[in-house]
Structure formats: structure tokens, C-alpha cells
Image (cartoon, rainbow, N blue to C red):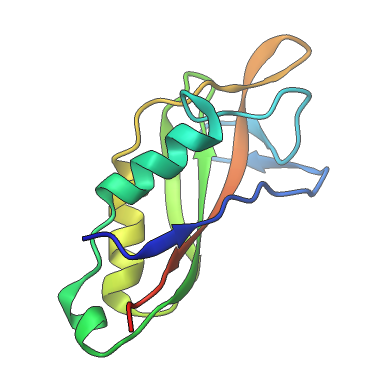
Length: 129
């Protein structure tokens, strides 16, 4: 029983960040942004199908918008998944779980080459009244 709306937002900051662990640039904006396989409709369907509203949050009628940030790697895998805007522990954990379970994305490209790209994904949990 999925009771949430899903919104998607990409970061719009045009600066590059160097990630020391991989020594490769992570871009915020590239010529071709990464895309979930099948596009936005497929991502929304994936999230609606796979997100579970935690019982404790449901019981307390807690909802809201969680901002999950991650890196889409040059091979399309997802890494560095973190919650940038938390709302409730079990909702935050569920959002992280689902993002980590995503299939490989179509990677972002800069000058025709796959690159690492930061991505922000708002996930909204709406309790049913």
C-alpha cells in the first residue's frame, strides 16, 4: 500500500567537486545528465512500487519530503548515498534503502565520455488521512 508522491530534482550548481577517495571529478551539471533506465516515468514507478511506508511513521501520521543525494558513477552505479534533509528516522532509512536498491542508471556524459555526477532526489511520504 504505497501512499507517497515522488518528485525529482537535479542539482543545478555548475561547479566541479573533487572526491578524494576516487580522485575523479564529480560534476553537478554535465552536457548529458544521468538518467534512470526508462526515464522519469520508470523511476517514479520504481519508487512507488518499492517504497514501503514504515509502520511507526504511519502510526504517528508522520510524512514529508526527504532529500536523498548520491553520485551516479561513470558505469551507472549509485554510490555515496546520503540523506541531506531528514524528517523521521524510519522514513529516512526507507528512502536510503530504496535508492541503494535502484538498478544502474544511464550515466551522465561530458564531451561524450561517461562521468561521475551528483544527483539530488526528493522523496515525499504523504500519510493517508
